[in-house]
Image 1 (tube, one colour):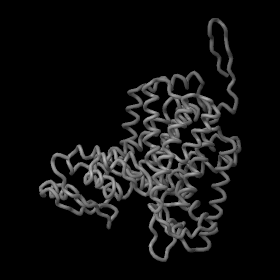
Image 2 (tube, helix red, strand yellow; image 1 turned 45 degrees about the vertical axis):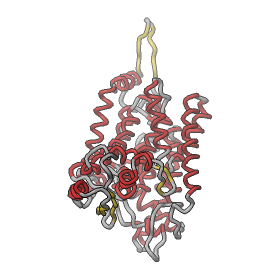
Image 3 (tube, rainbow, N blue to C red; image 1 turned 135 degrees about the vertical axis):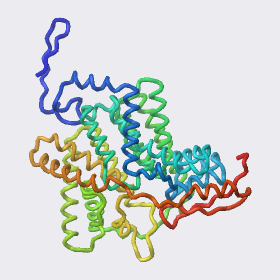
Length: 452
């Protein structure tokens, strides 16, 4: 019971069990008045401090991204090389894998403003900033529908510490994943009121929509929210994402063979292995090789894990509020698309899904893993004792998984700064092949005139 005196009249508010669950303005341990005070306390400087703290937490997971910055795969070979060789403006309209990638290409253009030796660091800093952005979105008062500030803080902690996602750490190529998470959080949040907030939201929707295929899954959610709320701003957001989807679709149609086409090797057994090994157990225990194990006993165990984890997700989907339901739906669509058309190149004699069973920590597992982690947190406030007990056990195990999987493997130092010195000293037109991570990859730069 909570009593509040207003104008000489005492109003009594009774908080029932429903109000103590997540996805409501209140969780156990306080009052609505206290929650409102918590929301008001998150002023601009506090949001900035939270953003910087989130960046620091992410750096502890891969400190070499700052102290020994190196290019990773498409970061250097595609995006920076294109910006350097053909110019930042022309490279902005280049497609890779059939899609436009606005964020990594803009990041590569910004990296050209710094000395060549610092280019990997610039891209890594942009990727880290993008990775920290969902924390600010979730802790904003606009996201209060997810639950109290303390509950959303736990959600942010799980996001920052999520195991089995080493491919997201300070890699601008995969920043499209975390940007789409920010875009989703802003879509389901309350509409922005100020002009600056509206500009920020729309800019993020456009950058996310023009950076890969995630707009295909965000657009229907935006349309549903616009139809449900009949809000002018929501219709504008939906329109922006629909336009971005059409542009990305045009890019894929214009280059129909831009994506590899190999035998999937799909089967229910392999699906259970991928779902259980990389998503459910990957979330709880961290990176593991169980999905690739040929042992029959392991296969049976993974089938049970897949069934149990899916049952927990379905319960959450049926019982939770709209925000969580939409996130589970969004994550499921992304996961399904990742398995149907992954951008991978299996070796001769191997299928795509066969290769994925050995691919722990890749960005394909990020969204379903985060959805499962947030589902376990939601289950802690369940009225069903058995569900609450299972979630408690899994979250305790997840603490060990986080500890084991906290530090991502450092990239091999190819001493990019030495190659940068050679490039700066070389005459115009000199071509230089520079090795990068993962080992075996390289990028080719052609010395440009100083005027460029």
